[in-house]
Length: 76
Image 1 (cartoon, rainbow, N blue to C red):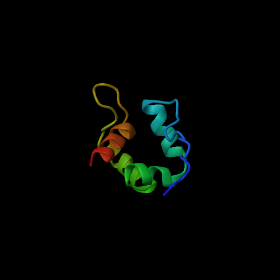
Image 2: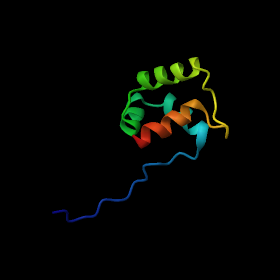
Image 3: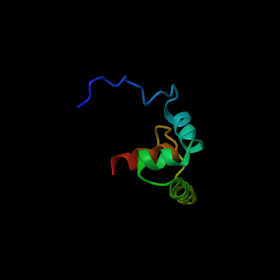
Image 4: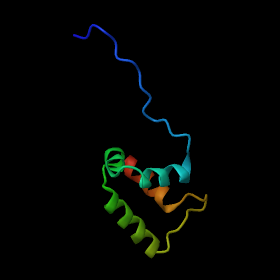
């Protein structure tokens, strides 16, 4: 049993959103992307490269390939 309460420490503190957020995510600690998306950075970057090789650059609403892949990884 805990006698003292643990102080709340914010986890998601980035002020960035969208494409800027995903690039911060990619450039950050490699374990962060693996922890959040359940895929390691090298595999994520390889998938982005494959998608770009097949001319999948942006969707009609302007979402980058990296952000689309992040959303996909979070859903599956």
